[in-house]
Image 1 (cartoon, rainbow over the protein chains, first blue to last red):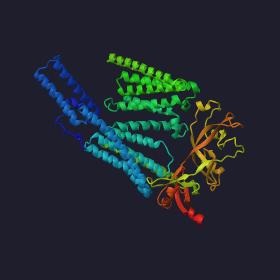
Image 2 (cartoon, rainbow over the protein chains, first blue to last red):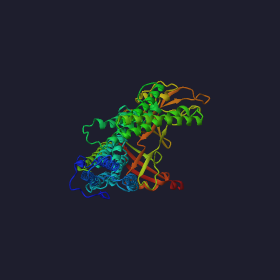
Image 3 (tube, each protein chain N blue to C red):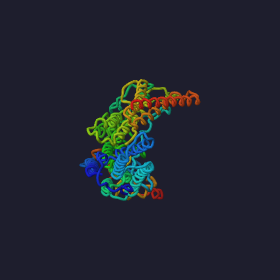
Image 4 (cartoon, each protein chain N blue to C red):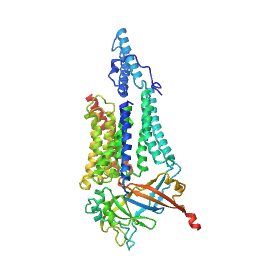
Length: 374
Length: 233
């Protein structure tokens, strides 16, 4: 369960190339390792073709330096040093996520199976103790420098136990449902995410906090907060704020989680627009129905296009993929609504095929533009 | 996980539990707002399988039965347009496309339940508990709880049964809070054997208190006997 599964001997001295990487920033270390591997391959090719000529001494010094950095990165960070390791990593990430969810379910079902036999005081103590014990376990795993998959699995269980904690307390005391529990869950997920350097709790925490702000703003207008999906515009400020955090925060050095902020933030925005383009009656805006519906269709398409543009201009792969997926879905959704009922089926699918061809053409053009800008 | 993150996360857990406990203490402090005794007719045992060992009671409520005299006019709600406006809803003049362009958001208000045959019926709603209690003072007959009211557009059918008549707003209670009431030990012990049968096999009385936040709790359960015994007698 330690780093070699993952753990390797600590190097005696940190190379200057590695010294600049924060010990928690595994992603930066992985990126550095991949750049070194690509450089080594390219160097070998240049030497073999005779484009570059290095003396034995120079070659040996370069090789030694690169190998030292590589070994240093492999020892200090839980990085994948080959394609095979990467594939195993992906498998382990999936296993740890599914395992975490399964443990959560086991915990919830175990509690519900026996809680009726417990007195209220015992229930309350056990419910509050579960996430605290989970946090202690996370602390121990951190001290043992356990592999991130085990930490990820444990973090999911700890989040699940805290959700169970407040949910069951609410049920036990017949508390009127409020969105405030989501504030606690969101904040807790963010702290766990930063403490363990994990993507999934961060994404969950951001999504829950966005929903919390939407529900709270709805209750401020007098509406019942559980109807928050009937006013999806409430998700827009939280989503936009989450997406903007990497650009506005004070410490530009820690960029490890930036893609998650952008991805979750813009996903929430696009999700809200998806609802609004279908049901303009769900809007806060007091505009007449057809105009509002058209307005939100335009906003949805323009936002998806803007996300693509943002992804292309700043080389943000996650944004490009999100924007492209949203744009294609919006387009096909509109085609279905406009034409499915009256168009012959063969013609409908012909139009869909032509639209897909047009999109291919458009994306190729965008790719070319991207190349030119590089 | 670094100690500062561990401490921050533990603080969130402790503070949220403390906030919940303070809320419960406030609700149950002092005199209870309401104390009612309900039977299995109004508060039935919610069925649950062996994966849930708790005992939960379900408030048996429905909208008021129709008082209309003609079959072509469906059941009307007791919450009409004027009442909806008193509850704080801002509703536009209904037209043919209102449903398309406007969907009012439900509100959390107080609703008055009246004991009617084997369940509760909704007879009124308001924003002020004291005002409602003064108007429905008979505590043995009326129970006041929180409820979620949703305005819907009603299209009255004409005499030939087709829509196209007068359009108007009506409010419907879509949720009573709390709908489910947890029964803690030791009160749950006498009801637990009847869980799987949806409580249909037993007569019982439950004393329920409502606190300052209108959150109820069980203070007594009295099992009066099995229904099959009653039948035999």
